[in-house]
Length: 23
Image 1 (cartoon, rainbow, N blue to C red):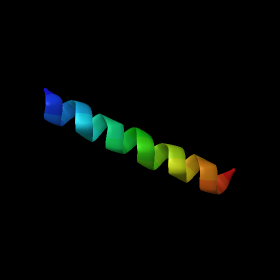
Image 2: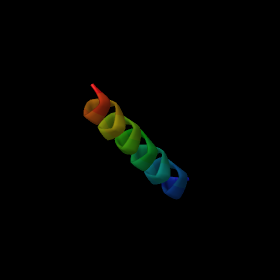
Image 3: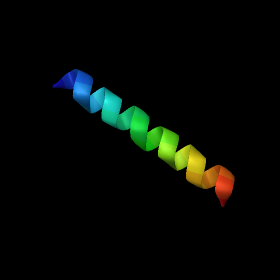
Image 4: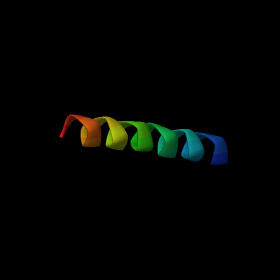
């Protein structure tokens, strides 16, 4: 469960950085 949670955070971070670079 912790592993899935951490992977979810990594995905959110990547998406956030991607949107920030595009914006």
